[in-house]
Length: 89
Image 1 (cartoon, helix red, strand yellow):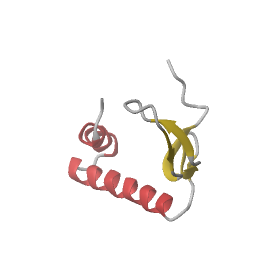
Image 2 (cartoon, rainbow, N blue to C red):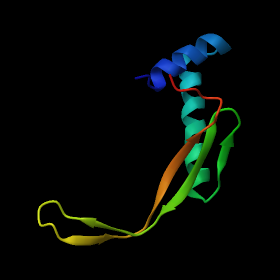
Image 3 (cartoon, helix red, strand yellow):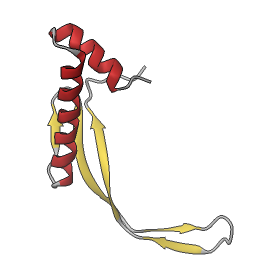
Image 4 (cartoon, one colour):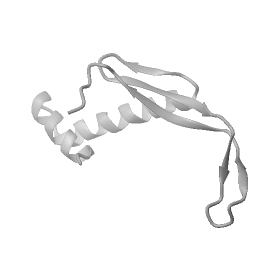
């Protein structure tokens, strides 16, 4: 798995800035994406994907211990849909 430290190291080399500056830019970018989505906006990064909030409908489920059917209320989920340009190997 690659984390922010690894990404910021690579970005710093490619953009000729310090790793600290690269890390701050990445963190600020991610916070902006989160804030925009939390405010009800879709964030479309062309060639990468779309971040958005979706409502998961109310549904019924079974408690595995008691076998009783319970209602799970609807909730908002943070989702990401990858661009078709991202290929899975």
